[in-house]
Image 1 (spheres, rainbow, N blue to C red):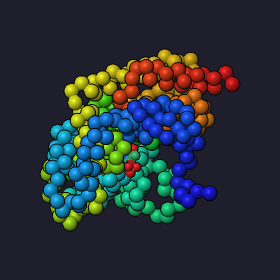
Image 2 (cartoon, helix red, strand yellow):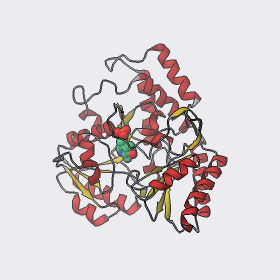
Image 3 (cartoon, rainbow, N blue to C red):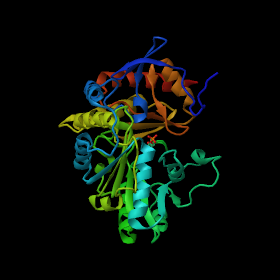
Length: 383
Ligand SMILES: *Cc1c(COP(=O)(O)O)cnc(C)c1O
């Protein structure tokens, strides 16, 4: 019997060691990891520069509290600021906490309370971010939700226009809905949101927790579009596996988060922030994301080619290294069969296979993965 709350339907695999794109299980089986710990290990398992930065910090000290000055926090905040064009950073421990900070800041800065989010969105599991999430299954059984959230269909201009009014503090959106099935936002929708936010004095919050830190081929996914958010949130890829989140906002919002208005004991922990600093140095360095874009295009076209006759496959879509394969049937069986073949992938909703490889994946590893996917999805076709 397990002493853990059964909050996860776990796979029948226990990792022993992991390096690069590979996980070796305690049973001695080798897996190619196209999950990256759910979009976390953008530099792969055991990345040397992250490990070195963490070990160096461990040798100095690993916690002192935010009563002290921290040049690692300052340097890392500067990198996030330079990469996003937004001047002020708050460090948290997770994605949900980064979104909590964004929700609180938007309400305090505007003096208003309503927040518009999208159906099929995912913003976290805390009490506020669960309410922000536009999926019933996340909220079932928890009683009445916070009432300040309003949900609109994704990429529906008219519904968004109708939802934003004088009581709206913010619109919170994902550029690519990750958990919601790999749906990519369109420019006219962003234009509409931006125009109506400005008209009503509402802030635009972009949840970049899954899409950020190079995942889509730009430092942040909003940079594929013509849009200027007021706040973005980051987590997953930021620490390459060390727990950290960040809320990054316009400098003019800084006055609303003064001493006493928000905080976190562990937020900005030096070990996690030293990992983040090493991650940002690696991912934002000259040429790295250009190569990511190239490999992501290689993956997408290899998939399109391999699956062009697979009757099971409805659509392949995504942005950069965030790819969804929508199938005709429930994909849980495919996940299990791919595991048998030695390939780990995720789902996003019942019918979408989700690929989130590390950005360091090689073309050879992509070729191996695509062969396995082709084998499993093609077999289904003939059943
Ligand atoms: C994973 C995720 C979150 C929640 O992050 P946690 O670190 O699990 O709290 C929020 N928003 C998006 C878009 C995510 O993908």
